[in-house]
Length: 271
Image (cartoon, rainbow, N blue to C red):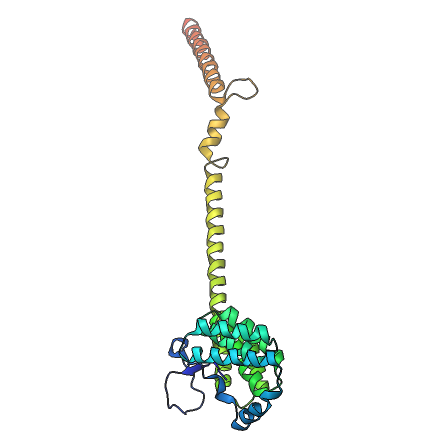
C-alpha cells in the first residue's frame, strides 16, 4: 500500500523527538501498493479469484495495469487505469486509494484527497484506514490546511497508535499550525497599527483644516471687517469715529483759545 509522509532530513537520528524548522523537512517517496499486504493474504486472495464476480476481476486487472505504470512513474496513465477500475468496481478500496496516490504524485492534492476520502468507507482494515487518513493529512498539509491535517493524523493514530511516521507528521502539523496562527496574529496587529496611524493622520489633517478655518484669528478679523446685514464694516465705522473725534478736538481747541484771550483782556485786580 502506498503512503506519503514527511520525514526528518537528518537520517540516523534517534535522540527522541527532534523538532526541525519546516524548511528542513521533506516529503518522502510513496511506497508500492503491496507494501502492507501479508503473504498469506495474497495467497488467500489468489485462491478466491475464481469466485469473484467477473466485473470485479476486470477491475483488479485494471488496478494491476495502473500499478505497473505507477511503478515507472507514469502517474497520469496510471490514474486512467485506476479510474477504469473504479468504473467496473466502485467498492474497490485499492482502486480509489491508488488513484489518490497517483493524483498526489501529480501534485493534484485536492483530487487526491477526494479519492482518499472515497476509499475510507470501502475498508474496515485498521491499517488501511490508518494509511488512508495519513495520506489525507498529507494532502491537506500541502494545501496549508494544518488544522484539518491534524484531525486526519489524529484519526490515523486512533486506527494505528504505533505508526511513528504519522506521529511525527502530527507533531509537524501542530508546529506549522502554531506558526501560521502567529503569522496571522502578526499580520492582524500590523494591519491594526496601520489603521491607527491612518486614523491619527486623518485626525491631524482635520485639526489642521480647522486651524486654517474658523479658528484662525486672522480669518476672524477679516470676517469682522466684512459688512454685516448690508451695514458698514468695522473699519469704516472706526474711520468715522476718528473723524468725529478730530472735529471735537478742534472745537475744544477753539474754546480754549477764546478763554485765554478773555483772560488777557480782563486781568485780575491787584489787591
